[in-house]
Length: 119
Image 1 (tube, rainbow, N blue to C red):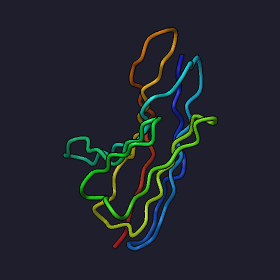
Image 2 (cartoon, helix red, strand yellow):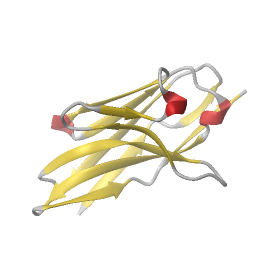
Image 3 (cartoon, helix red, strand yellow):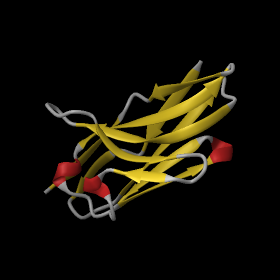
């Protein structure tokens, strides 16, 4: 079984910063892509940032230049540094990881961490 545990969400004023973390654990052979999506009430789930184990990144247009994704492969952990936060960044941030386990690759989701940006 694979588990993703997020941390680092909270309440911050507009213009502030937060750092999210997500650690994968369980029966893991390797982790391919790791990253973050977000979801707000009444909106579709939105890509925030993805990072492959080869170092390629993909950012959502609304966060480019403000958010930075990174990872520590030996810790199976991905981070999201969020700067210059805006009220519209308020959402539940969900960690995603493509994990190879028992010879099979599949995607897993964390439970989510709430980020609230006040104006």
